[in-house]
Length: 116
Image (cartoon, rainbow, N blue to C red; front, side, top):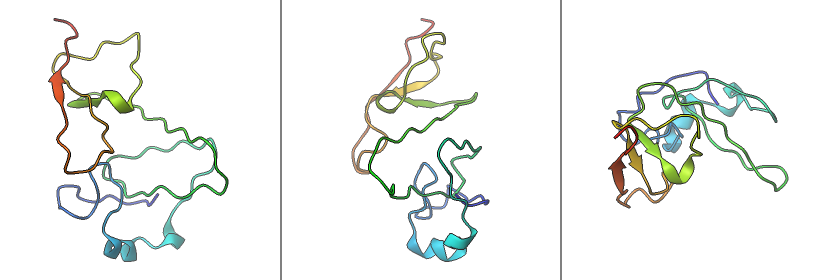
């Protein structure tokens, strides 16, 4: 995780989740300047925060926690756990496909039926 922001609108720099995809970009973000998170650490980051998933030293499950704030436009049902106490607003597109599927795959999306 690097203490920086990138313009996610510029193609080829980061993926749509902020993951660094351009190997040349890594020269601006050396490993020595990265913050490696430890077990149980929680950080605030955006989809413009450059980051990468590192291999685990020993095999085992990983857990990622994401708190989604207002102004959500799309909700990835295959990758998210619904909150039984909160309905998805009708203005939100619910995407049924995995958000990590190959970039060429078309996602199926639908408007939420909550509140209708």
